[in-house]
Length: 266
Image 1 (cartoon, rainbow, N blue to C red):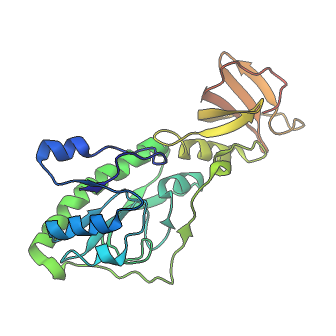
Image 2: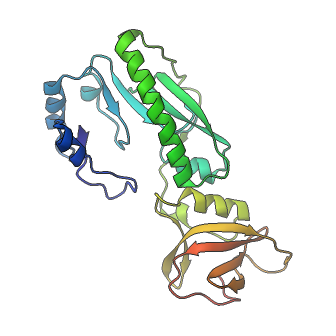
Image 3: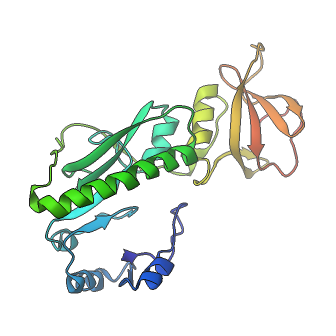
């Protein structure tokens, strides 16, 4: 196992140390300076194949060339479409109706290698956690199937070459991508909240110079046409109804310590 001791930016990070210790699996931690040490570690363990899952760094050729059958990567998107960063978040925010769980032989590009397994996944009323879990369950089944095929067929395992001229790549998101702007449509705001819900960092609004996380919202029937986006139309218990560009939404789960008042602006 090659892993990190900790991660300050991967919200779904898990420490693999207990797994390695319990099963007496050789383990090394990655740092910014120990690439050569990692290469030596992998060479000494002489793997037939490397599985690279949940890794946020491009692997150098010095690692890609080590295993006999190659390095198999994972990307939760319908390659060759939607390569790159944050595939679950972008798929939900953009309102896509379909994604996929894809395994491929890694090359020196980003998500551009030959595909060995791809299962399409429908997106319905998912948030980040439900889509994350669905993709995980599908992926675990795929791994068992293509691992057996690799064991039997080796180099002759079936693969589909990607046309690198096709498809698109998603960029790395930043803090501003998680900010709710009530000048957006109600659907866009709700998609953003779903996309960044647990296990991710949460969408936020700026209120009194503080970031307030919003975890769940729903569309609200609204006949008011002459109120500006961001105006609080009503407060019912702890739920806040806010005007959007094309309607209104109800903030159902949020982190306001003190509720704002009706008539204020968010």
